[in-house]
Length: 148
Length: 132
Image (cartoon, rainbow over all chains, first blue to last red; front, side, top):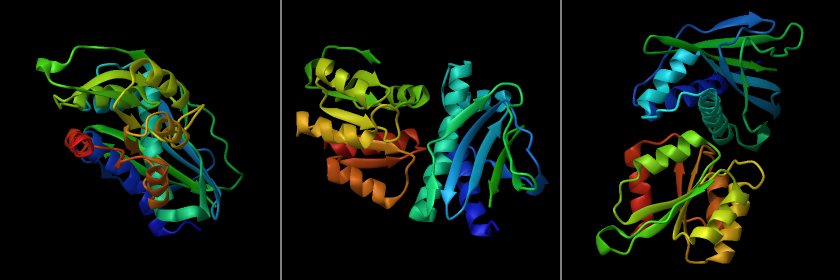
């Protein structure tokens, strides 16, 4: 069972990115549980976790949110590659936070990126995921934590 | 990978900076944000192998170095750069926030460590600290 402080590490890794990189904090919506493969937005950064816990953590965001985030970062390239780059960087930050807080009991992968129309994310039958809405300006992304 | 060579600013001795990161966003951000007159960006690289190639072309005095990169990671690249130029100053800029990683980078020869994400001010302070 996922512990509250473990979830907090992933959430803080995500919100910290917005607060520091865009100088504008994100807020957290009400978390909920879902069974089966959760739906994702246009771009998704994925980290795999093994060791003491097994599973995946995703940061998934719509293109519109990433575009505004890039603007806030003074970036002027809004290409598909830059969007991929950005969700990869957010996932990278989440991964770095997890390594710091969880130590070597957790083996955390280098992030990978999924993009395009609703990519398939595999899920074990019956596995439940925590979905944490990440609200920033008028946009909403999701942090999906699916660990056993 | 890109390289540039320019004249010193106002006749002052400028230090040459090489930016190494697999993220285009981060490379451009560092290039845009760094505001110190003493520094001139002479090249960028997306991994450790490109960094070594750029090193031979531009002979930088200072490097900003990501750690998690394809082909050759930052830790291995730091060791190689320090062997080639012991006086080189290396600022690690990484999302890896654990103490063990920072210690390993320093043991290989890095001179400073800045966590991602970072503000422009944090970046400029970290770079300034390295060149003083």
